[in-house]
Image 1: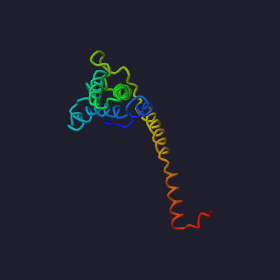
Image 2: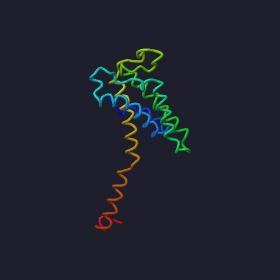
Image 3: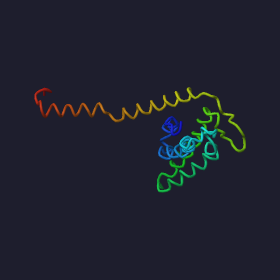
Image 4: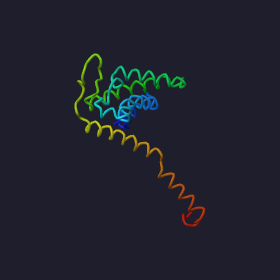
Length: 165
């Protein structure tokens, strides 16, 4: 599926040293290829969804493009660079595991020696990692604490004797 959020399962654990923005941008650039092929109906004509951009060379090109897009982030150049290349190469690795038409080493090696037909396992593993980071984010919002303090202020204002001393 183009633009799948499951690729973020690799990016979130690395967010201390790799830019999530660069990671997301390079993943979008790589998945434009199958997205456009499906949009124009070329897949129904026999074109494979994953072609030149879904190779290590294509991922490198998209990562360099992302790095060039991030030049305004001068203070964050290293994290931007790491995010772009981690995003590009991890995208090719994950897609090579689950899509038979990905040829990660083309044009040097034809076919996909990494294909294992394990899409459900990879999807579940990525979903578990994403769920963990989503839960950490929700906990960091401290919604319960904010809500309870609002309730206490409301009760103090409108029901001053209800909280005791």
